[in-house]
Length: 251
Length: 251
DNA sequence: CGCCGTATTGACAATCCTCAAGTAAGGTGG
DNA sequence: CCACCTTACTTGAGGATTGTCAATACGGCG
Image (cartoon, rainbow over all chains, first blue to last red; front, side, top):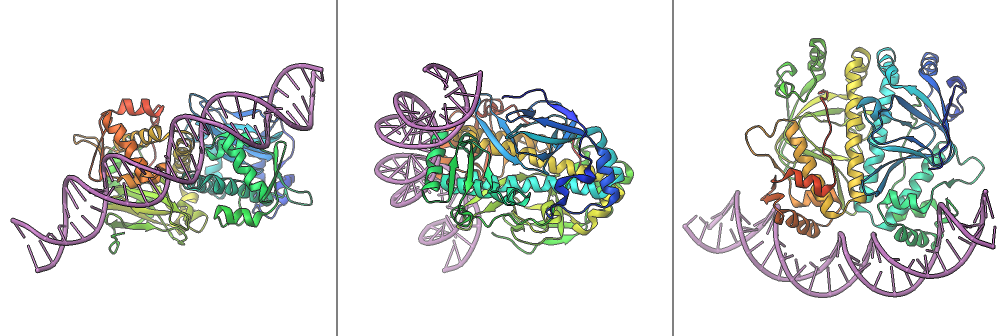
Protein backbone atom coordinates (compact mmCIF):
# COMPACT_ATOMS: atom_id res chain seq x y z
CA UNK A 1 0.00 0.00 0.00
CA UNK A 2 3.01 2.28 -0.36
CA UNK A 3 1.99 3.24 -3.86
CA UNK A 4 3.26 6.42 -5.38
CA UNK A 5 2.06 7.97 -8.59
CA UNK A 6 2.44 5.45 -11.38
CA UNK A 7 4.37 6.63 -14.36
CA UNK A 8 3.49 5.78 -17.93
CA UNK A 9 6.15 6.35 -20.53
CA UNK A 10 7.16 4.74 -23.74
CA UNK A 11 10.59 3.25 -23.33
CA UNK A 12 11.73 -0.05 -24.74
CA UNK A 13 10.52 -0.91 -28.23
CA UNK A 14 9.40 -4.53 -28.45
CA UNK A 15 12.08 -5.30 -31.00
CA UNK A 16 14.65 -4.70 -28.27
CA UNK A 17 12.70 -6.38 -25.47
CA UNK A 18 15.15 -8.22 -23.24
CA UNK A 19 12.62 -10.95 -22.56
CA UNK A 20 12.49 -11.96 -26.19
CA UNK A 21 16.09 -12.99 -26.05
CA UNK A 22 15.17 -15.87 -23.77
CA UNK A 23 14.69 -19.27 -25.36
CA UNK A 24 11.57 -19.61 -23.28
CA UNK A 25 9.63 -17.25 -25.53
CA UNK A 26 8.76 -18.23 -29.06
CA UNK A 27 10.20 -16.23 -31.93
CA UNK A 28 7.92 -13.71 -33.51
CA UNK A 29 7.92 -12.86 -37.18
CA UNK A 30 9.05 -9.32 -38.00
CA UNK A 31 5.46 -8.38 -38.85
CA UNK A 32 4.19 -9.73 -35.56
CA UNK A 33 6.90 -7.88 -33.72
CA UNK A 34 6.06 -4.70 -35.50
CA UNK A 35 2.39 -5.10 -34.75
CA UNK A 36 2.99 -5.72 -31.06
CA UNK A 37 5.28 -2.76 -30.89
CA UNK A 38 2.51 -0.59 -32.28
CA UNK A 39 0.03 -2.26 -29.97
CA UNK A 40 2.07 -1.19 -26.98
CA UNK A 41 0.99 2.20 -25.71
CA UNK A 42 3.57 2.77 -23.03
CA UNK A 43 5.08 1.50 -19.85
CA UNK A 44 3.78 1.58 -16.33
CA UNK A 45 6.40 1.79 -13.61
CA UNK A 46 5.26 1.11 -10.06
CA UNK A 47 6.70 0.73 -6.59
CA UNK A 48 6.57 -2.32 -4.45
CA UNK A 49 3.11 -2.64 -2.96
CA UNK A 50 1.41 -0.54 -5.62
CA UNK A 51 -2.03 -1.64 -6.76
CA UNK A 52 -2.03 -1.94 -10.53
CA UNK A 53 -5.60 -3.08 -11.02
CA UNK A 54 -8.37 -3.22 -8.50
CA UNK A 55 -11.44 -5.35 -8.10
CA UNK A 56 -14.52 -3.64 -9.44
CA UNK A 57 -12.56 -1.21 -11.58
CA UNK A 58 -13.55 -0.71 -15.19
CA UNK A 59 -10.10 -0.85 -16.69
CA UNK A 60 -9.45 -0.01 -20.31
CA UNK A 61 -5.98 -1.51 -20.23
CA UNK A 62 -4.13 -4.76 -20.56
CA UNK A 63 -0.68 -5.28 -19.10
CA UNK A 64 2.28 -7.49 -19.72
CA UNK A 65 4.72 -7.61 -16.86
CA UNK A 66 8.10 -6.56 -18.21
CA UNK A 67 10.15 -6.76 -15.04
CA UNK A 68 9.57 -7.53 -11.38
CA UNK A 69 7.00 -9.63 -9.60
CA UNK A 70 3.29 -9.10 -8.94
CA UNK A 71 0.27 -11.07 -7.84
CA UNK A 72 -3.46 -11.33 -8.49
CA UNK A 73 -5.87 -11.63 -5.60
CA UNK A 74 -9.49 -11.44 -4.52
CA UNK A 75 -10.92 -10.47 -1.17
CA UNK A 76 -14.06 -11.18 0.80
CA UNK A 77 -15.88 -8.25 2.33
CA UNK A 78 -14.52 -8.89 5.80
CA UNK A 79 -10.97 -8.65 4.53
CA UNK A 80 -10.01 -12.30 4.08
CA UNK A 81 -7.72 -12.35 1.08
CA UNK A 82 -6.91 -15.07 -1.41
CA UNK A 83 -3.94 -14.80 -3.72
CA UNK A 84 -4.90 -16.43 -7.01
CA UNK A 85 -1.62 -16.48 -8.87
CA UNK A 86 1.68 -14.69 -9.27
CA UNK A 87 2.88 -12.68 -12.24
CA UNK A 88 6.38 -13.02 -13.58
CA UNK A 89 7.95 -11.22 -16.52
CA UNK A 90 6.08 -12.00 -19.71
CA UNK A 91 2.73 -12.62 -18.04
CA UNK A 92 -0.36 -10.95 -19.40
CA UNK A 93 -2.96 -9.56 -17.03
CA UNK A 94 -6.18 -7.63 -17.36
CA UNK A 95 -7.86 -9.69 -20.04
CA UNK A 96 -10.92 -10.13 -17.86
CA UNK A 97 -11.41 -6.41 -17.63
CA UNK A 98 -10.99 -6.14 -21.35
CA UNK A 99 -13.31 -8.98 -22.14
CA UNK A 100 -15.97 -9.07 -19.50
CA UNK A 101 -15.92 -5.37 -18.71
CA UNK A 102 -15.13 -5.26 -15.04
CA UNK A 103 -12.15 -6.55 -13.12
CA UNK A 104 -13.04 -9.23 -10.64
CA UNK A 105 -9.63 -9.37 -9.03
CA UNK A 106 -6.90 -6.96 -8.00
CA UNK A 107 -3.24 -6.90 -8.98
CA UNK A 108 -0.46 -5.68 -6.71
CA UNK A 109 3.27 -5.32 -7.30
CA UNK A 110 5.45 -7.55 -5.14
CA UNK A 111 8.62 -5.70 -6.10
CA UNK A 112 9.24 -2.52 -8.04
CA UNK A 113 7.79 -3.46 -11.42
CA UNK A 114 7.38 -2.34 -14.99
CA UNK A 115 4.43 -3.23 -17.18
CA UNK A 116 3.88 -2.83 -20.90
CA UNK A 117 0.51 -1.17 -21.42
CA UNK A 118 -1.99 -2.06 -24.12
CA UNK A 119 -5.40 -0.63 -24.87
CA UNK A 120 -8.44 -2.78 -24.62
CA UNK A 121 -9.97 -1.04 -27.61
CA UNK A 122 -7.10 -2.19 -29.82
CA UNK A 123 -7.84 -5.83 -29.15
CA UNK A 124 -10.33 -6.23 -32.01
CA UNK A 125 -7.69 -4.98 -34.42
CA UNK A 126 -5.29 -7.58 -33.15
CA UNK A 127 -7.87 -10.30 -33.67
CA UNK A 128 -8.67 -9.07 -37.17
CA UNK A 129 -5.16 -8.53 -38.44
CA UNK A 130 -3.03 -10.98 -36.48
CA UNK A 131 -4.75 -14.31 -36.03
CA UNK A 132 -1.49 -15.81 -34.82
CA UNK A 133 -1.23 -13.30 -32.02
CA UNK A 134 -4.91 -13.72 -31.27
CA UNK A 135 -4.25 -17.40 -30.82
CA UNK A 136 -1.40 -16.49 -28.53
CA UNK A 137 -3.71 -14.46 -26.34
CA UNK A 138 -5.94 -17.49 -26.01
CA UNK A 139 -2.87 -19.61 -25.38
CA UNK A 140 -1.91 -17.39 -22.48
CA UNK A 141 -5.43 -17.47 -21.07
CA UNK A 142 -5.38 -21.23 -21.29
CA UNK A 143 -2.03 -21.38 -19.54
CA UNK A 144 -3.36 -19.26 -16.71
CA UNK A 145 -6.29 -21.61 -16.43
CA UNK A 146 -3.92 -24.54 -16.15
CA UNK A 147 -2.02 -22.90 -13.32
CA UNK A 148 -5.28 -22.14 -11.53
CA UNK A 149 -6.36 -25.76 -11.91
CA UNK A 150 -3.19 -26.97 -10.25
CA UNK A 151 -3.57 -24.37 -7.54
CA UNK A 152 -7.09 -25.45 -6.86
CA UNK A 153 -5.96 -29.05 -6.55
CA UNK A 154 -3.29 -27.91 -4.17
CA UNK A 155 -5.51 -25.90 -1.87
CA UNK A 156 -8.35 -28.36 -1.98
CA UNK A 157 -6.50 -31.60 -1.58
CA UNK A 158 -2.92 -31.16 -0.42
CA UNK A 159 -1.87 -30.88 3.23
CA UNK A 160 -0.31 -27.69 4.53
CA UNK A 161 3.22 -29.05 4.12
CA UNK A 162 2.54 -30.34 0.61
CA UNK A 163 0.95 -27.06 -0.36
CA UNK A 164 3.84 -25.00 0.85
CA UNK A 165 6.35 -27.23 -0.91
CA UNK A 166 4.32 -27.06 -4.09
CA UNK A 167 4.00 -23.28 -4.04
CA UNK A 168 7.67 -22.66 -3.48
CA UNK A 169 8.77 -25.17 -6.09
CA UNK A 170 6.26 -23.72 -8.51
CA UNK A 171 7.44 -20.15 -8.09
CA UNK A 172 11.05 -21.26 -8.18
CA UNK A 173 10.59 -23.06 -11.48
CA UNK A 174 8.76 -20.15 -12.99
CA UNK A 175 11.50 -17.79 -11.91
CA UNK A 176 14.10 -20.02 -13.52
CA UNK A 177 12.26 -20.15 -16.84
CA UNK A 178 12.32 -16.38 -17.16
CA UNK A 179 16.03 -16.26 -16.59
CA UNK A 180 16.24 -15.28 -12.95
CA UNK A 181 18.64 -18.10 -12.22
CA UNK A 182 21.53 -16.89 -14.30
CA UNK A 183 24.51 -16.67 -12.02
CA UNK A 184 22.86 -15.20 -9.00
CA UNK A 185 20.87 -17.35 -6.62
CA UNK A 186 17.10 -17.21 -7.04
CA UNK A 187 15.05 -15.93 -4.16
CA UNK A 188 11.32 -15.41 -4.09
CA UNK A 189 10.31 -11.88 -3.00
CA UNK A 190 7.40 -12.89 -0.82
CA UNK A 191 6.47 -12.65 2.84
CA UNK A 192 4.93 -15.43 4.89
CA UNK A 193 1.70 -13.46 4.74
CA UNK A 194 1.68 -13.92 0.97
CA UNK A 195 2.28 -17.63 1.36
CA UNK A 196 -0.55 -17.85 3.89
CA UNK A 197 -2.93 -15.98 1.61
CA UNK A 198 -1.97 -18.17 -1.31
CA UNK A 199 -2.34 -21.46 0.50
CA UNK A 200 -5.49 -20.59 2.39
CA UNK A 201 -3.77 -20.98 5.77
CA UNK A 202 -3.35 -18.76 8.80
CA UNK A 203 -0.10 -16.93 9.12
CA UNK A 204 0.86 -18.79 12.29
CA UNK A 205 0.36 -22.19 10.78
CA UNK A 206 2.13 -21.06 7.63
CA UNK A 207 5.11 -20.07 9.71
CA UNK A 208 5.23 -23.43 11.44
CA UNK A 209 4.93 -25.22 8.13
CA UNK A 210 7.71 -23.19 6.53
CA UNK A 211 9.92 -23.79 9.57
CA UNK A 212 9.41 -27.48 9.00
CA UNK A 213 10.61 -27.15 5.41
CA UNK A 214 13.53 -25.05 6.59
CA UNK A 215 14.50 -27.52 9.30
CA UNK A 216 14.68 -30.21 6.63
CA UNK A 217 16.99 -27.95 4.64
CA UNK A 218 14.65 -27.60 1.71
CA UNK A 219 14.39 -23.82 1.90
CA UNK A 220 15.91 -20.88 3.71
CA UNK A 221 13.78 -17.96 4.80
CA UNK A 222 15.25 -14.52 5.36
CA UNK A 223 13.48 -11.23 5.67
CA UNK A 224 10.94 -10.97 2.92
CA UNK A 225 12.42 -13.57 0.66
CA UNK A 226 12.64 -17.31 0.34
CA UNK A 227 15.53 -19.23 -1.10
CA UNK A 228 15.21 -22.72 -2.50
CA UNK A 229 17.85 -25.11 -1.25
CA UNK A 230 16.63 -28.52 -2.38
CA UNK A 231 14.25 -28.30 -5.32
CA UNK A 232 14.10 -32.03 -5.86
CA UNK A 233 12.98 -32.77 -2.33
CA UNK A 234 10.42 -29.97 -2.51
CA UNK A 235 8.90 -31.62 -5.56
CA UNK A 236 8.91 -34.94 -3.74
CA UNK A 237 7.19 -33.48 -0.68
CA UNK A 238 4.60 -31.80 -2.87
CA UNK A 239 4.02 -34.93 -4.93
CA UNK A 240 4.36 -32.82 -8.03
CA UNK A 241 6.16 -33.46 -11.29
CA UNK A 242 7.12 -29.88 -11.95
CA UNK A 243 6.28 -27.57 -14.79
CA UNK A 244 6.06 -29.03 -18.25
CA UNK A 245 6.17 -26.06 -20.55
CA UNK A 246 7.68 -25.71 -23.94
CA UNK A 247 8.17 -22.31 -25.47
CA UNK A 248 5.46 -19.79 -25.01
CA UNK A 249 4.32 -16.64 -26.72
CA UNK A 250 5.00 -13.17 -25.39
CA UNK A 251 2.65 -10.33 -26.12
CA UNK B 1 -17.27 -45.34 -14.20
CA UNK B 2 -20.25 -47.01 -15.87
CA UNK B 3 -19.15 -45.79 -19.28
CA UNK B 4 -20.32 -47.51 -22.37
CA UNK B 5 -19.03 -46.97 -25.87
CA UNK B 6 -19.35 -43.32 -26.75
CA UNK B 7 -21.21 -42.59 -29.93
CA UNK B 8 -20.29 -39.90 -32.40
CA UNK B 9 -22.88 -38.85 -34.91
CA UNK B 10 -23.84 -35.71 -36.65
CA UNK B 11 -27.29 -34.67 -35.55
CA UNK B 12 -28.43 -31.15 -34.87
CA UNK B 13 -27.17 -28.45 -37.24
CA UNK B 14 -26.06 -25.35 -35.36
CA UNK B 15 -28.69 -23.25 -37.07
CA UNK B 16 -31.30 -25.25 -35.21
CA UNK B 17 -29.42 -25.49 -31.92
CA UNK B 18 -31.91 -25.22 -29.08
CA UNK B 19 -29.41 -23.38 -26.93
CA UNK B 20 -29.23 -20.48 -29.33
CA UNK B 21 -32.84 -19.68 -28.70
CA UNK B 22 -31.98 -18.62 -25.17
CA UNK B 23 -31.47 -14.93 -24.54
CA UNK B 24 -28.40 -15.85 -22.57
CA UNK B 25 -26.41 -16.52 -25.73
CA UNK B 26 -25.47 -13.72 -28.06
CA UNK B 27 -26.84 -13.71 -31.59
CA UNK B 28 -24.49 -14.91 -34.28
CA UNK B 29 -24.42 -13.53 -37.79
CA UNK B 30 -25.53 -15.95 -40.50
CA UNK B 31 -21.91 -16.28 -41.64
CA UNK B 32 -20.71 -17.06 -38.14
CA UNK B 33 -23.44 -19.61 -37.73
CA UNK B 34 -22.55 -21.21 -41.01
CA UNK B 35 -18.90 -21.35 -40.07
CA UNK B 36 -19.57 -22.92 -36.69
CA UNK B 37 -21.86 -25.43 -38.30
CA UNK B 38 -19.04 -26.45 -40.61
CA UNK B 39 -16.63 -26.41 -37.68
CA UNK B 40 -18.72 -28.98 -35.89
CA UNK B 41 -17.66 -32.49 -36.74
CA UNK B 42 -20.27 -34.49 -34.92
CA UNK B 43 -21.87 -35.21 -31.61
CA UNK B 44 -20.65 -37.30 -28.73
CA UNK B 45 -23.33 -38.99 -26.68
CA UNK B 46 -22.28 -40.46 -23.36
CA UNK B 47 -23.81 -42.11 -20.32
CA UNK B 48 -23.74 -40.80 -16.80
CA UNK B 49 -20.31 -41.43 -15.33
CA UNK B 50 -18.54 -41.66 -18.69
CA UNK B 51 -15.09 -40.14 -18.92
CA UNK B 52 -15.01 -37.73 -21.84
CA UNK B 53 -11.43 -36.54 -21.52
CA UNK B 54 -8.71 -37.88 -19.32
CA UNK B 55 -5.64 -36.38 -17.71
CA UNK B 56 -2.53 -37.05 -19.72
CA UNK B 57 -4.42 -37.81 -22.92
CA UNK B 58 -3.37 -36.17 -26.13
CA UNK B 59 -6.80 -35.20 -27.35
CA UNK B 60 -7.37 -33.82 -30.82
CA UNK B 61 -10.82 -32.59 -29.97
CA UNK B 62 -12.71 -29.73 -28.45
CA UNK B 63 -16.17 -30.11 -27.02
CA UNK B 64 -19.14 -27.91 -26.33
CA UNK B 65 -21.62 -29.43 -23.97
CA UNK B 66 -24.97 -29.50 -25.75
CA UNK B 67 -27.11 -31.12 -23.08
CA UNK B 68 -26.60 -32.56 -19.62
CA UNK B 69 -24.08 -31.87 -16.90
CA UNK B 70 -20.39 -32.71 -16.59
CA UNK B 71 -17.41 -31.74 -14.49
CA UNK B 72 -13.67 -31.17 -14.80
CA UNK B 73 -11.31 -32.60 -12.19
CA UNK B 74 -7.70 -33.39 -11.36
CA UNK B 75 -6.33 -36.12 -9.13
CA UNK B 76 -3.25 -36.66 -7.05
CA UNK B 77 -1.45 -39.95 -7.42
CA UNK B 78 -2.85 -41.40 -4.22
CA UNK B 79 -6.39 -40.85 -5.46
CA UNK B 80 -7.33 -37.60 -3.78
CA UNK B 81 -9.59 -35.83 -6.26
CA UNK B 82 -10.37 -32.16 -6.78
CA UNK B 83 -13.29 -31.06 -8.90
CA UNK B 84 -12.28 -27.85 -10.66
CA UNK B 85 -15.51 -26.73 -12.23
CA UNK B 86 -18.79 -27.93 -13.63
CA UNK B 87 -19.92 -27.90 -17.24
CA UNK B 88 -23.39 -26.81 -18.23
CA UNK B 89 -24.88 -26.62 -21.71
CA UNK B 90 -22.95 -24.19 -23.88
CA UNK B 91 -19.65 -24.64 -22.05
CA UNK B 92 -16.51 -25.28 -24.05
CA UNK B 93 -13.96 -27.79 -22.83
CA UNK B 94 -10.72 -29.22 -24.14
CA UNK B 95 -9.01 -25.99 -25.14
CA UNK B 96 -6.00 -26.90 -23.03
CA UNK B 97 -5.46 -30.09 -24.95
CA UNK B 98 -5.82 -28.19 -28.17
CA UNK B 99 -3.49 -25.43 -27.14
CA UNK B 100 -0.90 -26.89 -24.87
CA UNK B 101 -0.96 -30.37 -26.33
CA UNK B 102 -1.83 -32.53 -23.39
CA UNK B 103 -4.84 -32.56 -21.15
CA UNK B 104 -4.05 -31.77 -17.56
CA UNK B 105 -7.46 -32.54 -16.24
CA UNK B 106 -10.21 -35.09 -16.81
CA UNK B 107 -13.86 -34.57 -17.72
CA UNK B 108 -16.68 -36.82 -16.61
CA UNK B 109 -20.39 -36.74 -17.37
CA UNK B 110 -22.64 -36.17 -14.37
CA UNK B 111 -25.78 -37.07 -16.28
CA UNK B 112 -26.33 -38.57 -19.71
CA UNK B 113 -24.81 -35.90 -21.91
CA UNK B 114 -24.31 -34.79 -25.48
CA UNK B 115 -21.31 -32.83 -26.70
CA UNK B 116 -20.68 -31.08 -29.99
CA UNK B 117 -17.29 -32.16 -31.28
CA UNK B 118 -14.74 -29.92 -32.95
CA UNK B 119 -11.29 -30.72 -34.30
CA UNK B 120 -8.28 -29.10 -32.81
CA UNK B 121 -6.67 -28.85 -36.24
CA UNK B 122 -9.50 -26.61 -37.44
CA UNK B 123 -8.80 -23.99 -34.81
CA UNK B 124 -6.26 -22.06 -36.89
CA UNK B 125 -8.83 -21.71 -39.65
CA UNK B 126 -11.27 -20.27 -37.17
CA UNK B 127 -8.69 -17.75 -35.99
CA UNK B 128 -7.83 -16.78 -39.53
CA UNK B 129 -11.28 -16.48 -40.98
CA UNK B 130 -13.47 -15.58 -38.05
CA UNK B 131 -11.79 -13.09 -35.73
CA UNK B 132 -15.09 -12.52 -33.98
CA UNK B 133 -15.39 -16.18 -33.11
CA UNK B 134 -11.72 -16.29 -32.16
CA UNK B 135 -12.41 -13.51 -29.72
CA UNK B 136 -15.32 -15.52 -28.42
CA UNK B 137 -13.04 -18.47 -27.71
CA UNK B 138 -10.84 -16.16 -25.67
CA UNK B 139 -13.94 -14.77 -24.01
CA UNK B 140 -14.94 -18.24 -22.91
CA UNK B 141 -11.46 -19.01 -21.63
CA UNK B 142 -11.52 -15.78 -19.67
CA UNK B 143 -14.90 -16.64 -18.22
CA UNK B 144 -13.62 -20.00 -17.07
CA UNK B 145 -10.71 -18.25 -15.44
CA UNK B 146 -13.10 -15.97 -13.60
CA UNK B 147 -15.04 -18.92 -12.24
CA UNK B 148 -11.83 -20.58 -11.12
CA UNK B 149 -10.76 -17.40 -9.35
CA UNK B 150 -13.97 -17.32 -7.37
CA UNK B 151 -13.63 -21.02 -6.61
CA UNK B 152 -10.13 -20.54 -5.35
CA UNK B 153 -11.29 -17.73 -3.10
CA UNK B 154 -14.00 -20.01 -1.83
CA UNK B 155 -11.82 -23.00 -1.04
CA UNK B 156 -8.99 -20.92 0.33
CA UNK B 157 -10.87 -18.47 2.47
CA UNK B 158 -14.45 -19.47 3.09
CA UNK B 159 -15.57 -21.75 5.91
CA UNK B 160 -17.15 -25.11 5.12
CA UNK B 161 -20.66 -23.72 5.50
CA UNK B 162 -19.92 -20.68 3.36
CA UNK B 163 -18.29 -22.83 0.72
CA UNK B 164 -21.20 -25.19 0.50
CA UNK B 165 -23.69 -22.34 0.27
CA UNK B 166 -21.58 -20.69 -2.40
CA UNK B 167 -21.25 -23.82 -4.49
CA UNK B 168 -24.94 -24.61 -4.46
CA UNK B 169 -25.98 -21.06 -5.20
CA UNK B 170 -23.41 -20.90 -7.97
CA UNK B 171 -24.61 -24.06 -9.68
CA UNK B 172 -28.21 -23.06 -9.20
CA UNK B 173 -27.70 -19.71 -10.88
CA UNK B 174 -25.81 -21.26 -13.74
CA UNK B 175 -28.57 -23.79 -14.24
CA UNK B 176 -31.14 -21.01 -14.36
CA UNK B 177 -29.23 -19.05 -16.98
CA UNK B 178 -29.26 -21.97 -19.38
CA UNK B 179 -32.99 -22.35 -19.06
CA UNK B 180 -33.28 -25.22 -16.62
CA UNK B 181 -35.69 -23.29 -14.47
CA UNK B 182 -38.55 -23.06 -16.92
CA UNK B 183 -41.58 -24.52 -15.26
CA UNK B 184 -39.97 -27.44 -13.55
CA UNK B 185 -38.04 -27.07 -10.35
CA UNK B 186 -34.26 -26.97 -10.69
CA UNK B 187 -32.27 -29.68 -9.00
CA UNK B 188 -28.55 -30.20 -9.17
CA UNK B 189 -27.57 -33.73 -10.27
CA UNK B 190 -24.69 -34.17 -7.83
CA UNK B 191 -23.83 -36.45 -4.94
CA UNK B 192 -22.34 -35.36 -1.65
CA UNK B 193 -19.10 -36.92 -2.83
CA UNK B 194 -19.02 -34.39 -5.66
CA UNK B 195 -19.63 -31.57 -3.25
CA UNK B 196 -16.87 -32.84 -0.99
CA UNK B 197 -14.41 -33.11 -3.87
CA UNK B 198 -15.33 -29.63 -5.05
CA UNK B 199 -15.02 -27.97 -1.68
CA UNK B 200 -11.89 -29.79 -0.56
CA UNK B 201 -13.69 -31.38 2.39
CA UNK B 202 -14.17 -34.93 3.60
CA UNK B 203 -17.43 -36.58 2.78
CA UNK B 204 -18.43 -36.81 6.43
CA UNK B 205 -17.91 -33.17 7.13
CA UNK B 206 -19.63 -32.31 3.87
CA UNK B 207 -22.64 -34.26 4.95
CA UNK B 208 -22.80 -32.48 8.28
CA UNK B 209 -22.44 -29.14 6.59
CA UNK B 210 -25.18 -29.86 4.08
CA UNK B 211 -27.45 -31.06 6.86
CA UNK B 212 -26.95 -27.73 8.52
CA UNK B 213 -28.06 -25.94 5.36
CA UNK B 214 -31.00 -28.32 5.07
CA UNK B 215 -32.03 -27.81 8.68
CA UNK B 216 -32.16 -24.08 8.02
CA UNK B 217 -34.45 -24.78 5.06
CA UNK B 218 -32.05 -23.42 2.49
CA UNK B 219 -31.77 -26.64 0.50
CA UNK B 220 -33.33 -30.08 0.27
CA UNK B 221 -31.22 -33.12 -0.43
CA UNK B 222 -32.70 -36.23 -2.00
CA UNK B 223 -30.98 -39.15 -3.59
CA UNK B 224 -28.37 -37.82 -5.93
CA UNK B 225 -29.78 -34.38 -6.33
CA UNK B 226 -29.99 -31.13 -4.47
CA UNK B 227 -32.84 -28.71 -4.60
CA UNK B 228 -32.50 -25.03 -3.75
CA UNK B 229 -35.18 -23.76 -1.41
CA UNK B 230 -33.92 -20.33 -0.39
CA UNK B 231 -31.50 -18.86 -2.89
CA UNK B 232 -31.36 -15.49 -1.20
CA UNK B 233 -30.29 -16.91 2.13
CA UNK B 234 -27.72 -19.13 0.44
CA UNK B 235 -26.15 -16.05 -1.09
CA UNK B 236 -26.21 -14.36 2.29
CA UNK B 237 -24.55 -17.30 4.02
CA UNK B 238 -21.92 -17.47 1.29
CA UNK B 239 -21.30 -13.74 1.41
CA UNK B 240 -21.58 -13.69 -2.35
CA UNK B 241 -23.33 -11.30 -4.70
CA UNK B 242 -24.25 -13.88 -7.30
CA UNK B 243 -23.35 -14.15 -10.95
CA UNK B 244 -23.05 -10.99 -12.97
CA UNK B 245 -23.11 -12.13 -16.53
CA UNK B 246 -24.54 -10.49 -19.57
CA UNK B 247 -24.98 -12.41 -22.78
CA UNK B 248 -22.25 -14.77 -23.77
CA UNK B 249 -21.07 -16.38 -26.95
CA UNK B 250 -21.76 -20.00 -27.85
CA UNK B 251 -19.40 -21.95 -30.02
C1' DC C 1 15.77 5.81 20.46
C1' DG C 2 11.36 4.07 19.37
C1' DC C 3 8.23 2.53 15.82
C1' DC C 4 6.79 -0.64 12.34
C1' DG C 5 6.74 -4.64 9.55
C1' DT C 6 8.03 -9.34 9.70
C1' DA C 7 9.08 -13.66 11.70
C1' DT C 8 8.69 -16.92 15.70
C1' DT C 9 6.79 -19.65 19.51
C1' DG C 10 3.59 -21.64 23.04
C1' DA C 11 -0.98 -22.57 24.74
C1' DC C 12 -5.44 -23.53 23.82
C1' DA C 13 -9.68 -23.75 20.94
C1' DA C 14 -12.25 -24.61 16.71
C1' DT C 15 -12.58 -26.87 12.55
C1' DC C 16 -12.24 -30.71 10.03
C1' DC C 17 -10.79 -35.70 9.33
C1' DT C 18 -10.95 -40.74 10.10
C1' DC C 19 -13.02 -44.73 11.72
C1' DA C 20 -16.92 -47.21 12.42
C1' DA C 21 -21.56 -48.30 12.19
C1' DG C 22 -25.87 -47.77 10.57
C1' DT C 23 -30.19 -46.41 7.59
C1' DA C 24 -32.63 -45.90 3.35
C1' DA C 25 -33.68 -46.51 -1.51
C1' DG C 26 -33.20 -48.84 -5.81
C1' DG C 27 -31.89 -52.73 -8.77
C1' DT C 28 -31.33 -57.69 -9.69
C1' DG C 29 -31.73 -62.55 -9.58
C1' DG C 30 -34.07 -66.52 -7.62
C1' DC D 1 -42.39 -61.18 -4.24
C1' DC D 2 -38.51 -61.43 -1.50
C1' DA D 3 -33.48 -61.85 -0.37
C1' DC D 4 -29.54 -59.61 -1.28
C1' DC D 5 -26.74 -56.48 -3.53
C1' DT D 6 -24.94 -51.74 -4.28
C1' DT D 7 -24.95 -46.83 -3.84
C1' DA D 8 -25.74 -42.87 -1.23
C1' DC D 9 -26.65 -40.66 2.84
C1' DT D 10 -26.31 -40.24 8.28
C1' DT D 11 -24.46 -40.07 12.77
C1' DG D 12 -21.33 -40.48 16.84
C1' DA D 13 -16.79 -40.61 18.85
C1' DG D 14 -12.17 -39.52 19.08
C1' DG D 15 -8.09 -37.65 16.99
C1' DA D 16 -5.31 -34.74 13.75
C1' DT D 17 -4.88 -30.50 11.55
C1' DT D 18 -5.32 -25.82 11.54
C1' DG D 19 -6.84 -21.37 13.71
C1' DT D 20 -6.69 -17.70 17.35
C1' DC D 21 -4.60 -15.20 20.96
C1' DA D 22 -0.73 -13.50 23.05
C1' DA D 23 3.87 -12.57 23.71
C1' DT D 24 8.54 -12.06 21.97
C1' DA D 25 12.46 -11.19 18.81
C1' DC D 26 14.75 -8.75 15.28
C1' DG D 27 16.06 -5.49 11.75
C1' DG D 28 15.30 -1.19 9.09
C1' DC D 29 14.43 3.45 9.31
C1' DG D 30 13.01 8.15 10.58
